[in-house]
Amino acid sequence: MSAIVFVGPTLPVEIAQKQLDAVYLPPAAQGDVYRAAQRSPSIIGVIDGYFANVPAVWHKEILWALSRGIRVFGSASIGALRAAELALFGMEGIGAIYQAYAAGALEDDDEVAVMHGPGEVGYAALSEAMVNIRATLANAEAHGAISAAVRRQLVGIAKQTFFPQRTYENIVGKMDDGGPAWRQELIARLLQHRIDQKQADAIAMLREIRARLEAGLPPAQVDFQLQRSLTFERLVATIEESSDPDPAPGR
Image: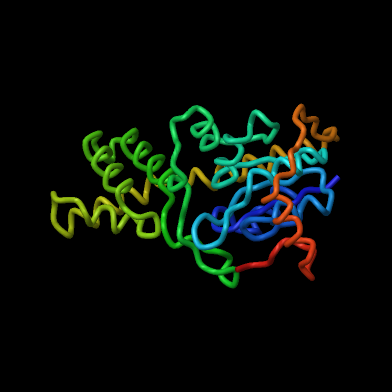
């Protein structure tokens, strides 16, 4: 039994490999889950994927994988979002972020989006995800490092900040009260209480996949019949015409 996992800025591959022996691929884009399913793994795990400049992974290709008996898990980033959207069809979500999307507490894609570097630098995150900011601010408040009013103010500022520009320095720098020294001290307090919820959820998913594989999980069973739309057929034709049958390498 085997697993293929799409991961990027959320979790370094060297850390992921310590949790689960799997084939690790770069963040998923449109068509990549279809390509992965052609390898017939037991499980496909989606953590990271593209949101903006590259077409995002389609719901239909995930449904196609499920219809072939491949279990599909999602967590942390676009994986959590897609899992919440496709839970009724059999995609399995893991972690607090997935649960928040599934419950409707989170709705926007930008909650998990980050700016990141290229594959040559391990897709290193260059901004902070909104879900991490929320978790960090809640943790800082719980430990008395900030007040509820400051937490609410920073959440509002962060949400109004375009996701590639979300860093603690930028967010705190937009506050009206306090001077430079006060802002630096506040940033230090926030970093001291930083929570990386995305990474925690990704690790939880990898551990769950490992446990399922060790238990010898059966193939996915679905109660829907996949309708192969014209747009899906066009995607399949494009993939099958490609000279490279494997999921795309880094972009």
